[in-house]
Image 1 (cartoon, rainbow, N blue to C red):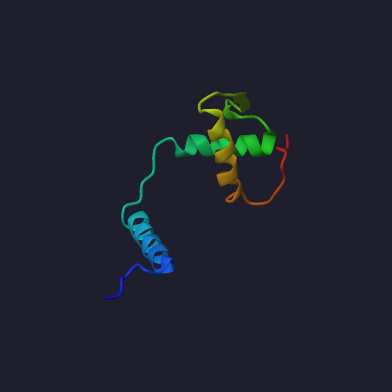
Image 2 (tube, helix red, strand yellow):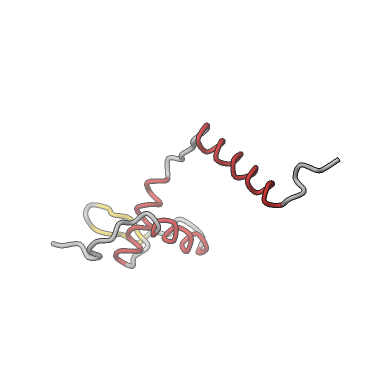
Length: 88
């Protein structure tokens, strides 16, 4: 009798399909997603790990250092090319 998952590629495809099913069927978003996207965008554009408060970027310390590396790298894949400095 042949095993169903004897080929690693079959197991990887099955895992990918299961993951896509859960992501599409049960989408989840946390309330702090916008906050961390803003921090990552400010770090990439202005080189300041901070938030925009009253028109000024204020440095913040919200996560451990490892998270600081992950956040901009995930945001960088979604940022559209354009000017890197704010005009004004």
